[in-house]
Length: 270
Length: 180
Image (cartoon, rainbow over all chains, first blue to last red; front, side, top):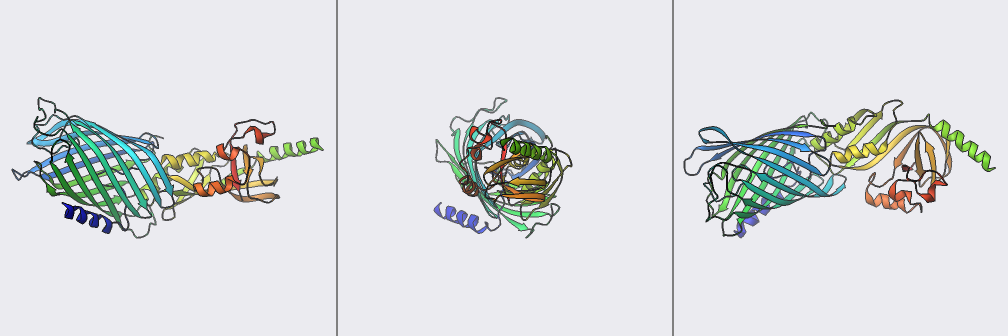
């Protein structure tokens, strides 16, 4: 366990040279610009442990920068659990940036966030995941430090699963509550020097994602490297792979790909 | 003597109302990525009196030109940068001045706005001149504090005219603190 933390720490520090903070598996403390709308489509292609089939979750998301402090997301959850695609629920996410210290090429920011979700899928795993698997809520804090072109972010959150809709009750023997910790970093590989908004940006990210149940000793530690392409300084394509490093909880499909496209409409609501 | 000064002041105000802010260079802080830079670029472009914006992405600098004849509200530029999620690190404004006398730690009316000059020697300025805004949130906190020590007037803290600095004029009007 200790070794895993040390290895994760080394990975994070080695990947820091030119970090960006548009993380793939977590959100940074920075918000989307005010009066701006973002459209995001996340495709989770996870390998089911028992069956070997691909567990596909599609999460369309609309994001809105309300003002300089607040942004909200509305998301839908669609999956292939019954063969064809079926809508499973929806979610609302809000993030409030309450601290900002900006200097040239640097910032430190802190934000609080919450997510509330519904889901009607049967519950087959101990992992709590309100973002697409469980009805429930998450409350958390994010701190992000940008140091010239290096960025580090930590996200600490409390997540609680409720009974899913459609009579899919949360198993009584499982812990309903968990604490999550995520440590994230990234690196700008290209371009070495910005000359225009049309340049393709290529970022590399590494994130470590930890969940610890509160009323049992169940936990997992995942590592999630990702590569990110940004086109025209406006459209983001993320390709990530999430892999369980260590865990003792039952998880249906912990390992697999995340393919995401995000397009930002700057100042469209001005 | 007092009357003559008042007449001269009145003339200066009348002349200055024809003066025009032409362009500005704004440096933003708190960002390195091109997507962040584009957010600021787009937000500045949406400000009603802005004619065009040219960005230096690597330097986080924006060269802004203003629409002719449109009143320029410098606070709106700061608001645009802050709404994009970042901060103003420097704002240098180029304006065409009629011959106008300025003095250190003194307010002047110009182009419909009030300016409070700091760290300048008494002089008459004319033609295209560039000044730097030193109000709170227009430059790093440490620099702002340095300028704030150069005056005892309360307007440096609020950006609004206070009873101590209006000589009977309107209290609460916006006053930009600037240096050459």
